[in-house]
Every structure is written in structure tokens, then in C-alpha cells.
Amino acid sequence: MQAFVKPKFKWMAYHHLNFAISNSPAIPNIDKIACISVACENFWDKHSHMNLHLEQIKALNVEASSKCTAKCPFCSRQQKIRPYGPHIISFEAFKKLPADMISRLRRITFAGNFGDFSTNPEMTDIAAYVKNLNPGVVLGGDTNGMVQSTEWWRALGSSFHDGGLIFSVDGLADTHALHRVGTDYHAVIRNMEAFIRGGGVAFWKFIVFAHNEHQVEAAARIAEDIGCAGFKAITSRDYNDRLEPPRQIDVKLKREIFRDYADDEACAMCNPIGKGSIYLAADGTVHPCCFAHCMYITEHNRLFRFIVPLIDKYQDRINFKTRSLAEILSGPYFKAVLAASETNPYCRMKCNVYKQKVRDELVVYERDFRDVGTMRDVSDDSVKQKG
Image (cartoon, rainbow, N blue to C red; front, side, top):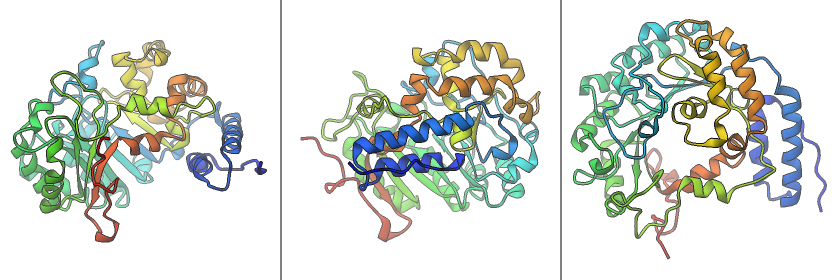
């Protein structure tokens, strides 16, 4: 057995260290487990009781709107047990965030749990404001691309020239809306093209089902033709009798992949500490991660129910529309969630060293169009074939 040295590391580098240990060919598996365990214990000894400060925040995940025109069957919107919305983060509300913090951010992702940011008509103003304060910040996000005019999308593209926006298009004209209920393929493609013409970097995400699996490569060719930077086909969150799993492409559900990577030694790493990232919900509440808010609204996993009484107790004290962000970050809600996440089994499963591996295994086909030399498929047969 090879000896290993106790790791010394800075708190923002934890994820990189953990990943490097897990993937190092020089360290036997049994030593990897021990090494990661030591890193985890050292990390939480140093940081589990720390106060968060604005200077530590390097990234935001922003739900700019809780509204969505689509009715995708497996979306978290269909699992709500608490009323939520409609809410938006208006331009005026967004400007309540500290300008000095925005000027230091590395990334802002406009995603969220329940809404599509394009239903917020002021997103073009918000994105332009951010880029004016911080020209180097990378903007990202995902959308169904259905609402707003082509002029709106072209204007938005100018703020995403060095970032990347994911458009969710699950098939071609005859299949796309079978899953993306309430959307129109042709309208989405027009808006995507306008976004690209405006200078935006677009990626096409395609969820595979039995009804569209034969269209994966054709969709990838269209993505390249209209100027997308990349194309990715992934498995669905779930399948049912109407939206069946593909028959020719080998797929596995995310929850099954998480079980494959179950590891009692894996350490949870809460986003504010591990990545300097926090989540802003459209109602203004601020959370350590998107899971915290999602689980409060849906309660679809019993392992994370500790969040419900915490948000019930502190909800009026964690809204950036009425409270300072600095006060929220250093307050009792964030302290309680960070303390609980250290040992919570849901956190340990969702946010550990294997998180990126799980995401990678969801991909059944991938193309990168930015550089011919870097284009790659995820298997020799381009698509993961069954059998």
C-alpha cells in the first residue's frame, strides 16, 4: 500500500483536491478513500462554523422568474406542495444586490428551480447591467426559448458572447413538443438563431425518449448549421407510459447513477463554501443552493426535510428584496443549513466528489462545434447503443 500525505488546502480549492484524489492513478482506491476522508474532516473542522461574507461569494445561481409557459411532465413545477409564484426579480430588485459584489463575481447562472428566465422581460436590462459592472463575468443559464421576440433575444445575445446559454429542444418539429408541452419548435429555433446573431453563445440540449431517439444526429447537424457552440443529448429525469425511454440508446436515470456512486466516505460540500456560490429564488429568498429552495416547495425527498422548519422560521429574514445580502449570509439560516449539510445523507449524495461524474454519465451524445480539433462523441458509435 502506498503512503499518502495529509492534504493541505485552501477552502475554495476543496472540490479540485477531492476530484484530483479520486482520479489519480498513482493512489490505490483504498488510499483514495482515506485521503478524501482526511480532507473532508479537515475542511469541516476549519469551516463548518464560519460566517459567510460577501467577499467569499464568487458566483450566483439566479431564478429570475418563477413563471414558465411550458408544462413538461417531470418538471419540479409539477411537484409543488406549497404555493409558489408567480414571482420575478425585477431590474430594480436586482440592483439591490451589492454592486461591489457583482463587480467581483466570476459567474452568474440564470437557471432556477421552477421558472424560465425568458418570462422576465427585464432580463436584457439585468444582463446588460451586470456586464457593465463586470465585463469579465461569465453569464450562463438555460431556457426553453419560447417567449419574447427575436429582437429581445438578439439584444440578450450581446451579454452572453463569452458565456453560454442552453436551449432545451427535445427533438425536431414533429416531436419536440411531446415533452416540452406548450412550446413550438419553430419559434424556439428562430429565437435561438436571433440570440446567436446577437453574439450569444448557444448550446442545444436534447432529452432523449423513444419518440425522438432517431433524431439525435439530425438535430446535432441543425445545431451546427445555425451556429450553436455545442450539442448534448442526455437522459430524462424520468420516463412513463407516454414518454418512454429510448429503445436503441442505453440510458440510466440520474437517481440510479447516484446509487451507483454511493459512497459512505463521500463528503458533502455546500456550495457557498465549496464554490463560493449562492442561490437567489425569484421570490427574493436566498439559499445556499437550489436544492434547499426546491425541497421546501416540493418536499419530494424525505432526507432533506430538515430544511422545511428552517425556512418557515427564517423566511422573512432571508429575502434580499427587503434585507441586506450581507445580513442574510451571516445570519442563522445559513449557519444552520451549513451545519446540517455536513452529515445530511441527501447532501452527501448530491454534492460530493462524484457530482461531475454523475453529470457526465447522463450524456449519451455530445458534439463541440467551437473547434474541429476538440469535437468529440461520448462513444465510438457516436450514440451509446444498447447491447
